[in-house]
Amino acid sequence: MAKLEDATLAQLFTEARSHNGWNPEPLPESVLRDLYALTKFGPTAANSTPARFYFLTSPEAKERLAKLSSGSNGPKILQAPCTVIVGYDLDFPETLPKLFPHAPGAKDWFPDPVAKEWGALRNSSLQGGYFMIAARALGLDVGPMSGFDNAAVDAEFFAGTNIKSNFIVSIGHGTTEGLFPRNPRLDFDEAAKIL
Image (cartoon, rainbow, N blue to C red; front, side, top):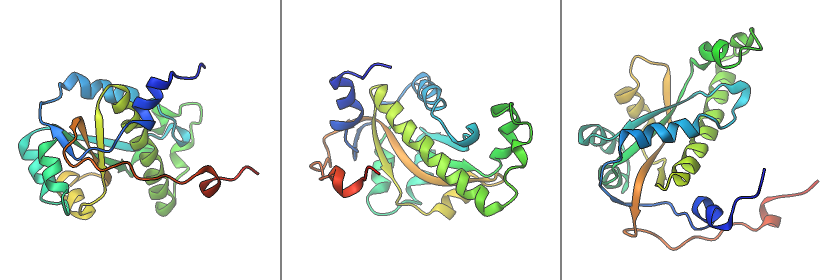
């Protein structure tokens, strides 16, 4: 593979920001489908892909989520054209015969419910990261949030399923409203070691 151009790296990482203000213009369904079409190719353990993405675009759906959020997250959810609940499905082993067909017994690899939940949470978090990079690659801005009542969101949106909420992320075209100066990052020697 070839190294990406600097402009592309800037769009994905170095110049990209977490947005708080949004142009409310709706996103076409085709963009949401394109976004998932990229996201689904990110690697997960045993191709388990436990993440489930609920795209909230209607005012009613966004209001349901906003009332369960904390601090300033509610207004951001209401203003953004779309806020996505990134969840994880604890029934993900049921899809392994389709997703990991070369290991017919993979469905039975997760008898321990704690290990299954950790695997689902870990891999859905990976998928959530891929989702945000895919959104930026498609020219969208992102605003991830964790300030919400997980249990209430699960009851409101995932009742009758085995899906739990991980985090939420608004997507669309961001504005400079509420955009903070970029915060520092740790240097290599503060965060990494070569052994």
